[in-house]
Length: 280
Image 1 (cartoon, rainbow, N blue to C red):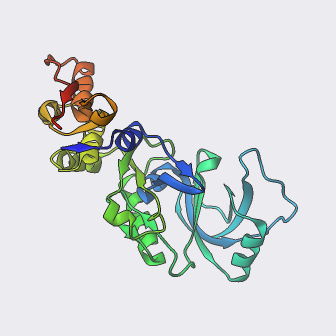
Image 2 (image 1 turned 60 degrees about the vertical axis):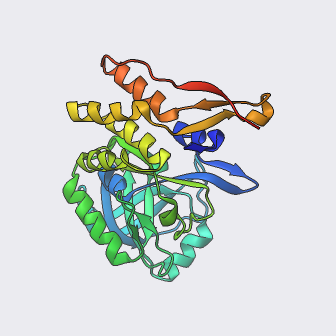
């Protein structure tokens, strides 16, 4: 089993987003589960007063005021201001239309969110299990469930998962060569990791090893050991460019070995890189 080293390495190393001629190669988004866990205040509301003379801050964000109609998380309040990257003209248009929003005030201003619940036909929010939410009803229901499940406030530990191509292809991110999603590090991630480590996809197995690093246990050690003999490899050097000798790198073997050693598990080092002469 073989694949392209550059593409796989960029994804495994987490190099994102990467842009070529204006088109992102790799892009990353937050799941609604993580947004709700991180939010110190989550509410439903409409746009308040818009200050057209306001200058953007160092991050290029505006302070946007919302009139709250329902608090989902945090101390009750009538108005809430978050930092967003939205042009004043667009804010004025949405206010005139009476748009409703799901507002998320997170500990870090650059991570604040406001999802336009009135943007019919354009809503696309991902859950931690890769479900694409496309309606206000679905988004609000998912937000309530995520808050119920993870009531913590701010700085929730997260993990990056690769979104399956067949799912990404149905969204506005379909032009990206690789879409990833940040999810909470919780029991659901652990369950998913045990399924992914048996996947036929190299990226799934790589993600599984990284995820299980957060859940050390005899079961996790046993699962990761199975990757020490993973036959999948990526090209380091093609034979045509190296006098008929191709250099292969076994990426998941390397990740599995490094994690087991970090955990203090006695394990023999597998073949991680090898040169193979290719017959013409």
